[in-house]
Image (cartoon, rainbow, N blue to C red; front, side):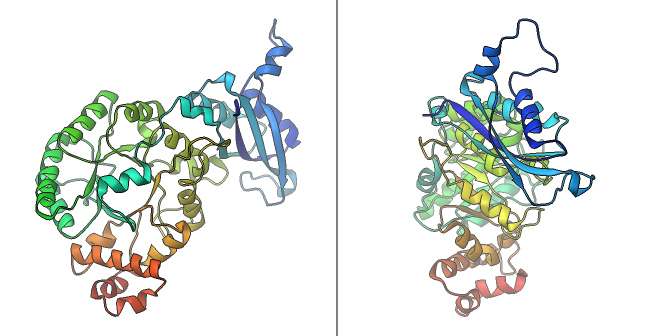
Amino acid sequence: MSHRFAATYLIETSLNPQDAAAEMAGESSTATFVAIPGERASIAERHGARIDAIQELETPPVGSNRSAAAIRRCHVTLSWPLENTGTSLPNMLATAAGNIFDVQSVSALRLVDIHLPAVLADAYAGPQFGVEGTRRMAQVVDGPLIGTIVKPSVGLTPQETAELVGRLAEGGIDFIKDDELMADPPHCPFDKRVDAVLDVLRRYTQRTGREVMYAFNITGEMDDMLRRHDKVLASGGNCVMVSLNWIGLPALAYLRRHSQLPIHGHRNGFGTMSRSPEFGVDFQAWHKFFRIAGADHIHVNGLDNKFYESNESVARSAQACVSPVFADGGPAWPVVPVFSSKQTVWQALDTYRVMKSTDLIYACGGGILGHPDGIAAGVDSIRAAWTAAIEGVSLDEYARARPSLARALGAFAA
């Protein structure tokens, strides 16, 4: 089992790449701008970052206004002894994604992957529920969990929220989530929303025997999150949600140790780290930290989404969620990828092709709530689209005997 961790970067530099990599290695470990009295060579030998690989690329630069001929583009892999950070995810991030982004020798720098040792599984709990536990809690044995988001995202009272949730449950939905903007606002206090929503869902389950998973947004200060989790648990709820970037890794890890419910991880704000092609952090690296800290579900955007991200990037992100999280074995700790953002009947086939699986949440806001024949028809159309995808039947053919799907195909442009 390795006692080092490593990171791979995409860099652009006008220097010799070896020199640029050496500055990156020094800034992220033992180097200073001037020799320090008493500094020992053994310290640099034992604790200094190591340049493991430099691969020069032929693709043109994107991060500089200088002429392309003056810029060299490379993949650089650095590694550090675990002795520098211990098994602390925040300190690993401070090493791999800290001041290294400020070095002068690069005109572009992007963390494209992180390679973490399985020894971290001794320090962190990882996802508690993952795919199997989520299916068990939601009582969805096969097929994707068809989900939606409470809309409007802001403005509904607890009773208005509960009324909408009741209609969604009656429509056959599997999964509902608070919007990331809804936590504990004055117009819709958290406790009152929990009571109203779970009262509706409890009565629905008693009458039908069918569960609906609802992810309440508990994002807030640490004490507030723990109290809100306990409120949901005591009230009979089955999922909580947090905004991963804004609560941070230590808070997520602490919540995971406390939680008895699946943790739905929303990635809002991810664009601040990833949107620029020449700077930032790829999902491939970013999500591993939150997987290890304990998220059970992680948002991956959606195919043909309303945001900036390409389908290729979304596909890589979704596949990453079920790929090994550690570089040297250890527990797999897959998490449920959550497809959302402008999802309708049209993306089901391509999503299935990307995942080769239905172990996912397919969250449609307008794609369900905006169906011209109402919520039940919206849910039915999404299920029909997924059945067609799984059975290998074209949407047009499958829609001939399914009016809800036919109406959705016409209502939502491909």
